[in-house]
Length: 354
Ligand SMILES: *Cc1c(COP(=O)(O)O)cnc(C)c1O
Image 1 (cartoon, rainbow, N blue to C red):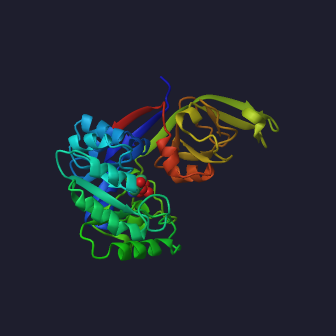
Image 2: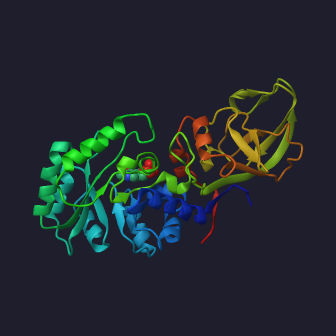
């Protein structure tokens, strides 16, 4: 069997959730959209269900998958509904939903429902992507209350730059939110992972931790005690010596600058390892660091084993995990950990800590 696999440590997932909830205070929705950032939504939800206050996903289909697999805790649908008939499923499966633009309020007004909805009303506090502008918040809130369909409204907003401790944008967003929602009743929610880790002033009734649950610290100073949840690993499947000056792989991106012992690894971009990874991106062989050399191909990649005489065919290779932070690989590929984690596929998933 091909040795490529993703090991998912559910104890680490629970540890990270507890850390986030305790740090923020109040309640916390575990954000498990996009298949729990690539970690397996159902398995992650089951591992967390006993202790979470609720979950958040992006879309209705993700929420239904969780309900179908027996998850009964609250689930918030972060993008809300795309059509009125989705509200029937929201109603039937007792889901919470975000409302972030007027068409969604219209759908709620027209809906025929069995029980009152719990709506998270989203404000645009400066990101200018989704949500009601400051002056539209009160009218939106009033329309929802007047609709007769809504039992409870949580006021929320989302940060654009909370991972930048020196940017003033986050403080400005907090001020804009507080001023636009002043006097409106209801609970509040501002902080994503970076908000939880970096912005005490963003703490409200509910936190919405996502990436931090998976142990990838979004702040520039990653010293918050998170534990990586995914180890992406494979093994050396062949070894070859190439001479000084010899090219390696597609496009001959790498030329050996010394006699080089090349390890061929069963992992490629079809598994989710980024093709954009730079020359020299770290990997670990039997827990010792070495580096990527040559282009990543679809099913294989190549690493430098010249200074690792103990590495043999079958040696374990970690692409990211406890030795190699996924943030470091993302940096070497010009992207963020979020994208790498939610792109992992084809490899076997193995879970521990159930
Ligand atoms: C995805 C998402 C989150 C989680 O963000 P992280 O940066 O992963 O913590 C929180 N809130 C909303 C509205 C989101 O869409």
